[in-house]
Length: 97
Image (cartoon, rainbow, N blue to C red; front, side, top):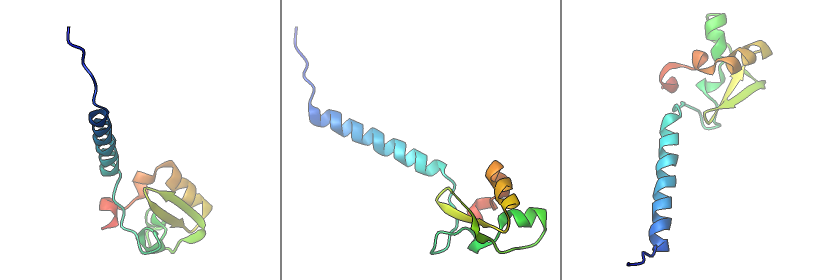
């Protein structure tokens, strides 16, 4: 019977391909968010205010939250908590583009 030997380079190459594939799939699954040069979404406006107050309101860094690679600012702790419970409900469609 012939003995099989594993080539370590082949095993490492296969592992590298697997890691790269999983990383790419993970990156594709995250929503793309339009951010400014400081990493802030929707130019610092409180996204929840559009739903609760019906108008744009500037957010405050005191009430900030990071998700999907973006920092979101809110005008109040109440709006921050609403966003935390259901971010997809309050995020702009198509990532704000």
